[in-house]
Length: 446
Image 1 (cartoon, rainbow, N blue to C red):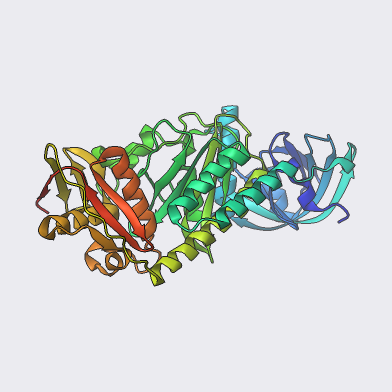
Image 2: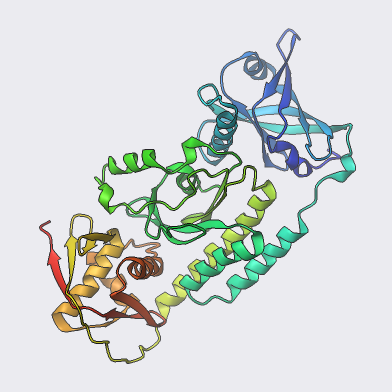
């Protein structure tokens, strides 16, 4: 092929419908429009399989098809000669195409008609350019590469997880002009993701949760693949329907212990990129915009690189914290004064309430209850990450416990909801519990 398939990626954004031509066994031609042509790699594309029609019948008979795509920027047409290989009905490719098709269907009012049954994978045998300015193939945006380089440089200077997360989201706003973003970490025990950092929202949503497979974040996490949507799609929004599903889940999570997800109510564009280390999921980097088609495949490629470096940095910081600890700096505890604060703990899910206001649950809830209980029993204020990891009552996972992320979540949630209780980092692998008001602890019956 004289034209590289990768150079045709603007043709696969869905801005202009494509056409597919096939022939039956007796040579009768058939031409129809396509909902989506998906770039797979330098040698393969995938087409949507939505219903069994003449095109599908022809492809299964002779394995050959011709597809015409158009570059919306140059008006260049390209004919792709394809050879059918297989149909995928699950996995990253299928889920990515399903999300894109849902966007097209929602935007055109055809949600009930457009339903993906499978992703047909084809080998590209030949590419022929027909008309248009084929010399003006779009090159990577210089400012995007510059932004990526600056962001990667910023991550390299971070020695703490909290700073690493903040630098990532701040960099997206300053350098990428992305004003709504969040970082979520995986809770492998409960199979959900929890928000540890966000930018651009009226409420931070720190501690809000998304179940695996739910919405664009959950699907990207479950399939370990980027998901990009260019239009507002109800199926991938987080609203009342998601709250209802979460409340009725097998965990029996009550609405009063659910922190609202901070996403835009009417996002026009969404992009979720999993944080992966050697195929192992750590979390998801999520960005969105009120503008439709805000994120291109170039944004997706750049954010995948950024997410990869972020995941590697998280892993390295976690390993470093595991094997080293700095001595705590001694400091007198501030006197606790003022009205007594009532802290209540529910062992069933480790949910914690402060003066009848929900604070946190899960592992983070178990951690804060342990700290408060040991302070009440012996006046203790100094703690280490290592002892938390060795405490079996906290039920941290053996692999990827994300303890640092849970402590950041707890620290930020306390600062937002209960500033009289604070966690202060005093050294690598060490922290202090600070109380500015007297507490009364009550443990509800299990």
